[in-house]
Length: 253
Image (tube, rainbow, N blue to C red; front, side, top):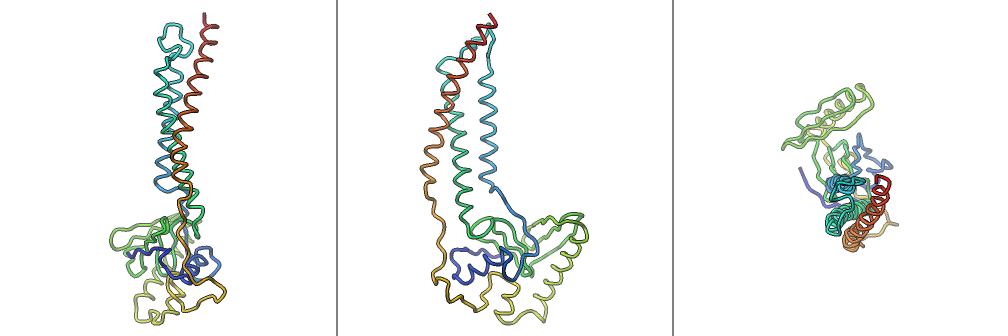
């Protein structure tokens, strides 16, 4: 496995990979698994969901119950509301900032299968698994599973078993061709298989400088404002809850 920083590549190779990932220039991806949310966003969404549930539980505690000490929740309860609201706001700010940064990537985040192997592009530092290192390729009813030396495993969804069998056959064929005596010898021949290889061609109308890494922008501001806004809204929820609770107690009495 090889790690490649996309923004450390030369401009022609960057543009080759972008075009190949979009399917507008060879080599075309044989399969692609899009990743909508990175792990940090998924974890933050889970935590945000837990905060919403806990806020609902706290708000319902003692609501409309004439015998409960929490029928009208005291000002001390504001700390609970504000804490949960701040955590909720922080999680949503992290998700928003992360997705905003990923939307500025020059290619779709995901896992690509090319004739040369798998390119794990879920991060800007690409992980390249050469087909020469392929240990096993298995076809299922609606998926293809690839295992590489070193333990890396990838699964790609396909439409049916026939497509899965064809894809496994093609991948094994590419492995034989790239590993055998008839493997491409020139960089231009190998570039027809590998989107990260230099084919020796440079667009004369393209800038010479490599693309720049997307900057964080207003990420820090969002991370600071998120908890503040969340805490303020939660405090408003506490006030609104008590107003509704007064009416509920009146009708219950």
